[in-house]
Every structure is written in structure tokens, then in C-alpha cells.
Amino acid sequence: MVQHIGIKAKINRSAKSLTSFDKVTTITMGTVKLDVYSLLVINTQTFMIIDKVSPYNGILGRP
Image 1 (cartoon, rainbow, N blue to C red):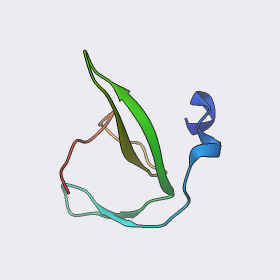
Image 2: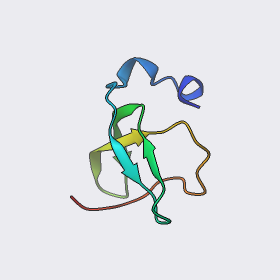
Image 3: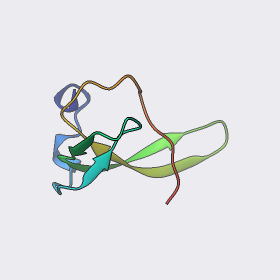
Image 4: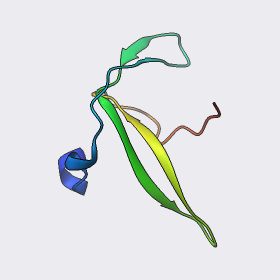
């Protein structure tokens, strides 16, 4: 998917532990910062990249 949207060069390769809602741990392949556009706001967000199929398009969280 990363190749399809042309962001491969923007990936910061770093392995981090990510635990899902069912307490299964996955190691991330890296992170990428992308601009998220809303009605009147453009905000840069950091997304974690994993090599698994996810039922979610994105997960919103807090630090």
C-alpha cells in the first residue's frame, strides 16, 4: 500500500511495539508524517506502519 500512495521515501524506519485491542503485540516497520486535511484545518500527524491487514483505516489516540 505504501508504494501505491508514493510515501515510501518519507518513512522513518524504526521498530516499536504496538499492542492491539485484543492484547496482541506487533512490531512496527516505521512511522510517516502526513498532512491530514479537515474542514478548516491542516494538521500533520504521525502514523505507524505495520505489515498486517487491519480492520481500521486509522486509529485515533492520545499520547
